[in-house]
Image (cartoon, rainbow, N blue to C red; front, side, top):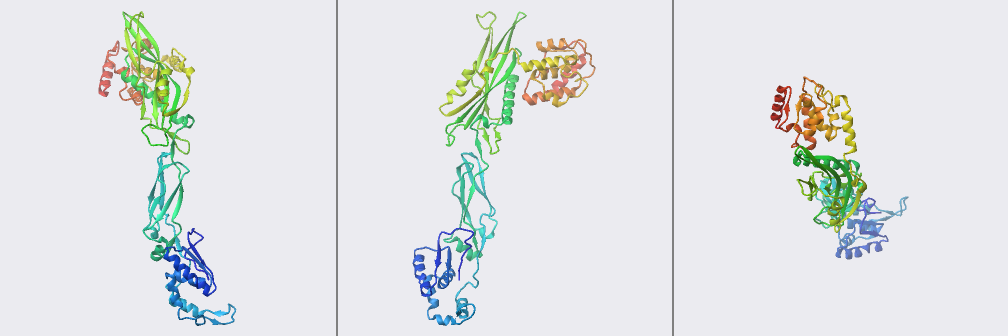
Length: 504
């Protein structure tokens, strides 16, 4: 006869009793079991044969070992058995069975049903490695588990692949006995191990930055630069080219600690060629300067699939400025301009990288050869302008006064072509612009043009796209005062009214 108090195939036990037979020797186990009990040592599983099974079943039935002897006092072995020679054995145990039925509270000896206390319980991992954290969510699905509480052995400082153990516990000395008594079931396990997954981590190498994320940051950086141009530049300042040179990545040496600072910093480095013009006595004097500029982004992260992400609204630009002086004869300056940035790539590097080497490691990915190349005009820009000027009648959109422009075609335009496109609709009707470069450009194109229709839809589309890309406060050349008309005066007045109505 064997007695089991739990399904030992489905869980591990810390303490178990194996009780042998031998009649009197089998009952001798009771003395040992009593001594262990008095030292608060209790079995989680009992197995026994013959007399050991009898001792075990009475103990499992809730009796202290010394009490079991009371059941057998006054009984002889012959009182509970009969000597027979049946096929099943030498002894007839009917009286013994009656004796057990009389004295045992449990009427059936069967394997206890189990329940999973973790069913419905979810361990959630959040944060960024190596400082991820774990929390428990959900509610136990089994009614027998409703009284359980749960605790994590490790809640923070986590990375993907780490192990977290969850323990289910009750306010009871023996959770298993409590569940049997109150629910007639036992928990299948009281601990469960979870593997940390799904955490993002801080970018440690430029190679971890996806092309899509880099392009998004570049687009944002260039929008920032053009927005600053629209806000603060004057008519005598012209951007010749804005060239992306590459990037610097700084990674914190203290990434495993909590401290004030960024885990990484990415610098996108640009070279701007700027032309400054000064006019006096009908003569123009100009100077082209190279300004080195950056946009820096913070705390770039990468997920388990390799996708990088960054908050592009959290950025910095240089706090340093460059003074540009223009002189007619070299003896003293006649005009001054100031630009955010640095005169050389080396000074930018010292400010952005060298000054932070105590706290950061660095990785450099800037093309210094490109930085040292001086171009009078951006080659790609020049090609686009040439292509536009060689189109029918020299206009960007030759029929934009009559035909709706496709918005996708607008997005493909360069900054210069976009400037021409938004003004050429007006230029066809004889408007003379205050801006000298526009006036000169259109005087050569509009001499033979006579178009009776103005497509205001195209004008609104172009204007809306410019403000969406460069900011709502972007100054459009049409908003300038001072241009006049040599013909179609009524159209000028109508357009002026439209402009005022929009607040341009």
